[in-house]
Length: 158
Image 1 (tube, rainbow, N blue to C red):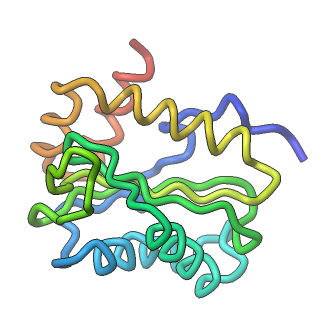
Image 2: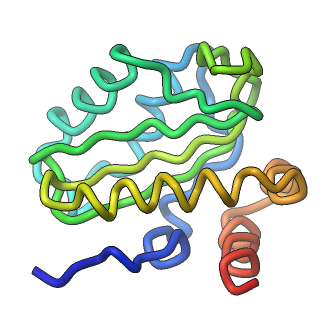
């Protein structure tokens, strides 16, 4: 298998994996909504197992990383390679984040067990990118998935 360690957000994300104003009132509801975006995706071997892995990881420790961002993720045999989904929420969601700020921006990161290095690098890349206040503001103001993709493209090419 070809290594994907150099994959960027824009290489993994496309318009059908972006959702603006994702519904839900709890972190479990929004995580389930995020995983639903991957229903039928060819990289998912077992949808139920994938969703369970993400929810179990969240139960172990909150993925609310601060500044209104959550990075739910899992490494699981239910996935081939690595995939990424993005959403903004319709309302702020309590994720028990490290800074207690409710979440509005979510990235779902899924990877096969053999993609640990890529998984960690992608988590790190997203975390660095989301430290930029203006990027977070742009993502929350975006009106469609094309705008979201463009924001990431511009940021990664900078």
